[in-house]
Image (cartoon, rainbow, N blue to C red; front, side, top):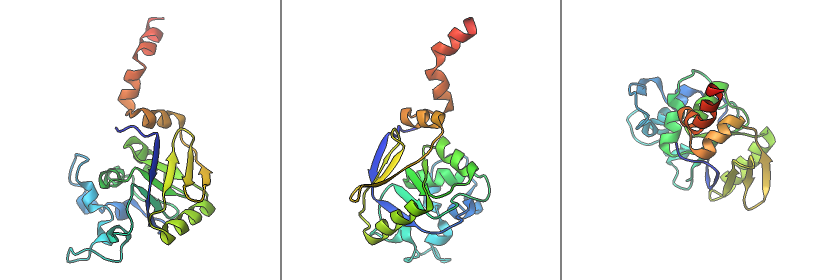
Length: 193
């Protein structure tokens, strides 16, 4: 995985509540076993018309919005436990998803795949969405070490929680096996004691 310490980026607003994993990546696209290529079908049924042409009204098709942060509505990633949803978000290029609530399984899958789910209060989420929709180039800073998200031009920030183990893994670019390898000396010392 790539290391994640701090990110400053513009964001894409998706103020839709209860986005489930089938909306993130429809089940008909779950045929591959590698993680690559899922981004092209992220939010497929919202991004494209039935004839395959782009839905110009959907936010990912609006060129005014760019960035590697997705600011979503409440209860993001609910529904089935498919890990493919996190694969699709990561493959599309998102490094962070912000919401006021994440489904637990989605949250774990995101963290295991290098996507940082930042849970904020409903009030802060509303401020964030308002700023991004008002000014698409709004820069947002996500500081994992400090566990803080900030709207750069206003300085308005919010703290967020993260499991300390997953924080260590993201900062160092570790998956679970890399983490074990990084502790090899301590494990061997324990085993030999």
